[in-house]
Figure 1 (cartoon, rainbow, N blue to C red):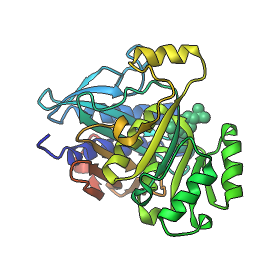
Figure 2: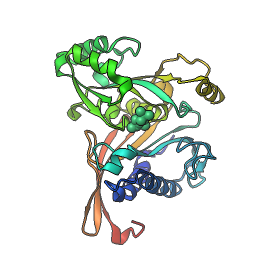
Figure 3: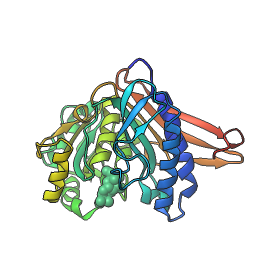
Figure 4: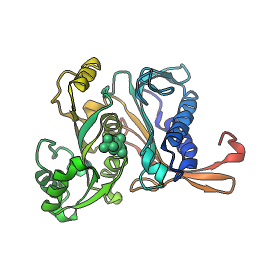
Length: 317
Ligand code: VTB
């Protein structure tokens, strides 16, 4: 790919954040998600790409926009695949809690794992610990290896885990190993990325969340040189059939970030509410400020972009 599309993608996540930012704390996650999706869909068509959604809001019959297989972009070139989560953390946005983001990733056609809408077990760490993690090992072992790689004590490490009953065992094990834990109510993409950012205070993201979001996190981690492994979690045979239909036949396979997001990958995310990675949308008289992160795997350039938007000149908001 000869253009840096990351800078165009950030306009898409900014538009989505500005739209759903109005729904922060309103207790209506569906309207928040719809606002983000609609803004993302509209803005995507201003980009000169021939895009196909491969990770989206659902199957064609379930989602009105950004459904799997939908064509997006201005019908130009290059031919690319798109992964989106217009609002990652719909509940957090609806409750005005921390960590909601809007996010998109782009890869050359065929670059993304077509992850079905099911669970994925994930582990993510920063570049210093790239190559030392093993999703099949107990948390204690991974923490020991990460501490060694970072030249610190296990007690210095902070692990982000979704606060769910299914994580009781790993929470107990991480505590026993001595690391600090930050339990979150929703949204595991941002903390996976935060694990690659030294000043975020996050060293590892661990546990079971959504598989499509695993692919988005993988795209970002690949751009940042972070280490990630993901393994699909099947709850029943119907989920196995669904995965098979999407071309997955090895149900025990462990995917690296590179295997989930192949080729020259681009990633962008904008904060909706404040989080460890990004600040949320702040409105002021006549406009708003957004904080975003954009990156490209080929150059490994990571940009944090603070933008001021003037609504008088962007009447759509
Ligand atoms: C959610 C969401 C995460 O995984 O928890 C979901 O907050 C699945 O978990 O960000 P539950 O079914 O227990 O809610 C994510 O969507 C993404 O991985």
